[in-house]
Length: 373
Ligand SMILES: *Cc1c(COP(=O)(O)O)cnc(C)c1O
Image 1 (cartoon, helix red, strand yellow):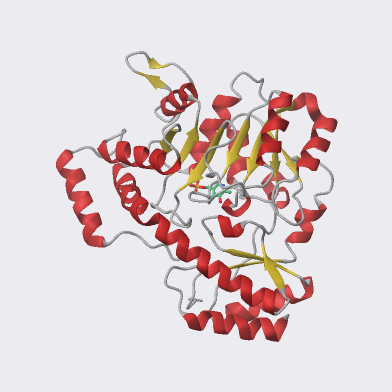
Image 2: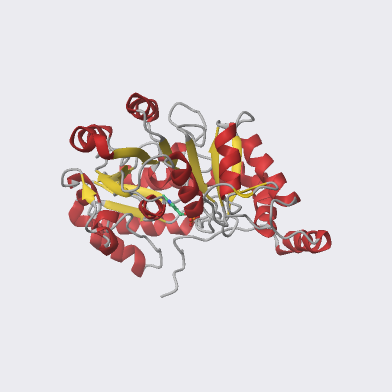
């Protein structure tokens, strides 16, 4: 069914502008392999986030995750455990496998939906010797409020902290610092479905100059100039056309995020006025990939979800099922029963946040919330 208000509607640069970029790329005869557009895009990301940061671009966030995990865990014997929430997108746990290790799923915090530090401590107590790293996830691209504590947790145990901030380019941590600046590195996705979209693309951001050099080499078959392949690697390079789109998207990102936060706020007012639920904490400081609402009453979720969809508004439920319920992960370890991860998937509702959202959509939502909650 075609929705009047689809869950995602990417806004790309004007076709004429992209045509001009393609013309330039064709004239330069430089289509990939760190060309001028990639260089500009990479510098633009660093400018946006903070000039003391190193940026390595990738063809998508999944290869960026594989590269980061592989490099930061390269001295560990294969088969270690990496702490990761189950309440995330499957790319992170899949990347842990490509790096030669296994996910060790932990629960989330009930009110923030961020990975639970208490659960990570419990995982450490139980499996400590086998744990080789932490893949923290900034849920829905929202900066986790306990980021300082997570950095301490990893540092005290001598394991790397890799942060999957895929949907969070442009988000702020609750202390006002940019998402992208913490841990050993943070990973962004620029997929068409994210608030900052270039088609397919991703990046790793780090303060570690050496790590950045090595990741760039990893993205290019593990090559180092003249010496051939000196380390593990793959082809993770970003194409010029996608980088060119990124350069243009950087010009509008602040306006885009401002508008997305306004839409989020409107939804928040509707649900709180009806006393029906609330927006996930700190989503207002994120780049707002969608509007995640935790409903007060689990009974109202399914009727409201169907009501919205029948009214042409493509609401969805994330993350259901959580990753430990996917068939491919059913034999991996969980710390405890992941009760909150299971429970939240019955109370969460994710609403579309589009740029240029017509006012009438909010009226429809008000009516349906009154009817079902
Ligand atoms: C979108 C997403 C990814 C994957 O990004 P790609 O660029 O499509 O590879 C990974 N992790 C999370 C949390 C995501 O939301």
